[in-house]
Image 1 (cartoon, rainbow, N blue to C red):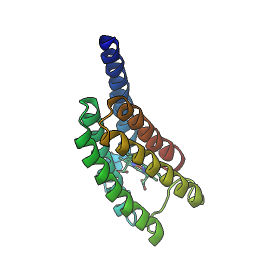
Image 2: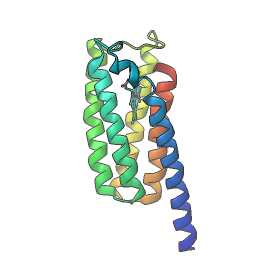
Image 3: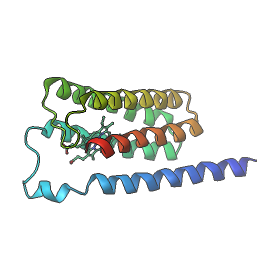
Length: 152
Ligand code: HEC
């Protein structure tokens, strides 16, 4: 019983790690462009926020796989701060979406969805509920990916 629970958590953790690696790979595919100074001018704050999100989500995954709710909570709170900056950029009109630029309502909806998933993850972290943290983290990563599919 205990053993099968551990096995399940392990499999979930491996799945998560895999999704994360695949996702960061995809997210970084345009980094060489930036090194050549070709890309990104006005939207640097937004891209900076996204790179901070990238750091935070890795910390979240790493804390979730060892079942450390406190660390998860600290990282989730950092993400809230980053998303506040994203909201501010959107309001100031300094975010220039490269794809589907006209769909700002849908973008805002995705941001709210993201925020909602984060709140559920924070709840799981407060309860230090390992299985809930694993499944909510998958949900959060899924939202990162879905927004990128539409707008990145
Ligand atoms: C509401 C939409 C949305 C959500 C949610 C979102 N992103 Fe993004 N992200 C974007 C957009 C749009 C870009 C493209 C920015 C650009 O290149 O101008 C982007 C770009 C990125 C980049 C590449 C930055 C670069 O150097 O070009 C990374 C890394 C990234 N996001 C990480 C994340 C992570 C990790 C999450 C989830 C924890 C996340 N994002 C959630 C919209 C989103």
